[in-house]
Length: 243
Image 1 (cartoon, rainbow, N blue to C red):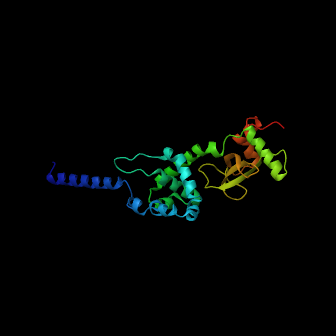
Image 2 (tube, rainbow, N blue to C red):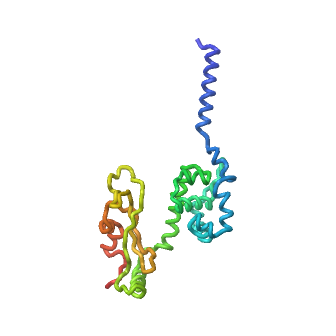
């Protein structure tokens, strides 16, 4: 038989369940609620704008360079405000990403400094990096053309007295945390896990073409042969001028 005590017990259980549910549904951590007041961007950025030397130390670039990058990507990284919260501005998103790239700090460290959730930092870094690549590649790393190769050869011949050379190629091992289920693919002769940045540079040390992501275990020759860059050279799709 259902009694008033049973009813009271049921109400207590429902109240406890609702309380636990509210705790689980907490939208923003208390620390991050102080972002606009105490976050590194909001406290430090106004001062960095007045001190180009400190700005360069912090971002590895001048404030003019920062603003130029912002102008190029801000429309791609802008988010809309909602009824529940104000979106993080494009400028702060870029600052978070550049600080991560400049220091290599963990998302946890960046999140604590900027008073932003760790998963939010991760999403911002990925999104902003994609926007940077999308908007900068055609400006600073365009598809190599016959004219580019000719100018490179002229530079090697005139500057370095090294004729008939259109570029200098080498690979750089970049230390990484071993990806899951990859075995020894990324274990290199330096006794660490790495992925390889392979690049062709001109006489002025500037990149002409790059390939990123080769297995650390492979030789430079093997990486070049397997790369999209190497295959395009092999099939005469890189615009290399006739001898």
